[in-house]
Image (cartoon, rainbow, N blue to C red):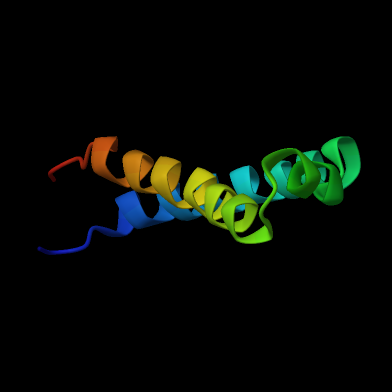
Length: 69
């Protein structure tokens, strides 16, 4: 599988923006400890947050169209 520069660029931009948004949401708005108390497991919250960043980034990479020149 050959990696395409355009797809990587769009995925990286999405990753940075989405990651920053989730950090603000989790650390400022929801408070991380509140999430841990609600779900009962630190590891479960961490894995959930990592998947919330990685899976949409992979989706952006997969669905980005590459223009042939």
